[in-house]
Structures are given as structure tokens and as C-alpha cells.
Amino acid sequence: MDFKKNVQNGLIVSCQALETEPLHSSFIMSRMAKAAQEAGAVGIRANSIVDIQAIQDVVDLPIIGIIKKVYEDSEVFITPTLKEVRAVCATGVEVIAMDATTRRRPNGESLVDIVSTIKKEFPDTLLMADAATLEDVAYAEKIGFDFIGTTLYGYTEETKGKNIADNDFLHLKQIISQTNLPVIVEGKIDTPTKARKALDIGGYSVVSGGAITRPQEITKRFVDTIQMQGTKD
Image (cartoon, rainbow, N blue to C red; front, side, top):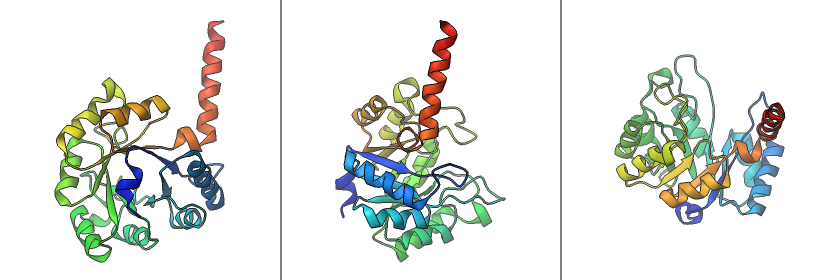
């Protein structure tokens, strides 16, 4: 499956539910992915081996696979160590995404060593760099990633509180002007208008998650707007 060709200018739906969330279930995530495929999604982003395998059973879309795991000695938790990277690669997903920030990794591991090892062991698997800063982007391109993701912009100490859509997608424009790699726009793409704008600017594809697959977040947006409107009456 040609991932690059299949996902260009399309929507990738992130089907994830953490253990603390009501929809935490590989069965439910597989049905979310099936619904996304029927609606026209071009790819799926999935967390955990069991969710990836359940989704692979019911859809034929390319998958960006990750494992979220917290380690006490690092803030990095998206496919943070070689162990998790290998486990996701072994599922046969087309792309594996990992935290590509310059922050200290768990167990003192090196991102460049992880990338080098995986390129040798799984040469057909594409690597997506979940980045936050322009420095992250430059480093990820230098060490051999295949895609840049804006996933962690707004979620690190340096970028906390920022949104990829701020200032007419200024950060995205800066990334696109800096890198030769395809840029997958992810992180708070919570409306169709933002998704379309990100592609028009030059994003390769867009990922949306909570706005589609997390009913508690969708409901809260309705409730907050209703209550806010009610206070004005």
C-alpha cells in the first residue's frame, strides 16, 4: 500500500481512547475506524497493539501506529523507547509515529539510535516525527524521518497553550517553508474549516481525533456553548 499516495490531501482519523475514557475498547476503536473509512477517511491513527490489530481486522486503510507509555524519568510518552517502536513495527502498520522532540528520552535512549535501528530492522516502515518546535523539525529531518507531524505543538513546555491554527497557521507555514518532508497536520484540528485551511497552506494531510471520535469532548463543546449562550439571555 502506497501510504504517501493514499493519504495526500486527505483526512486521517485518530481512533484512540485511553484507559480512563468511556470508549476504551479495541472493539469500539475498530468500529470507529470502520465508520471513518465509510465516511471517506484516507487513514487511521491508532494507539496500542490490541487496537491496531482490531482495526486491521476490519479496515483496509493505512495506519499510523503508536504506543502511549509513561516513564518516570521522561516527559516523552508517544512510542518513547525502542521497545515500543519495535512492537508497533511488528504489527505491519505502514507508519509508526514517535515523539521527535529534543527532550530527554526514557532510559537515556537516543532518538537517532532508535531511528537508525528501525531503518535497518524494518526498512519498509515509514517514520513520522511528532514534533513541537522548528528545532524538532530540523533534527527529525536530519536523522531520517519520512514525515513531520505537528502533533506536539502546544503540548510541550516551550509551546504550552499554543494552537497550530494560531495567527493563521503561522507555525505550520514556518515548518513547511523549512522542511522538504511532507507535513501531516495534527493537533487541535477540530473543525472541517481548519482541516481545509491546513491543506490549502501546504499540509500533506490532516489528522483529526477528539472532534470526531471522543463523544465526551464533542458533548462538552455543545454544553459549554449552550451554557455560555444561556448566561447572555
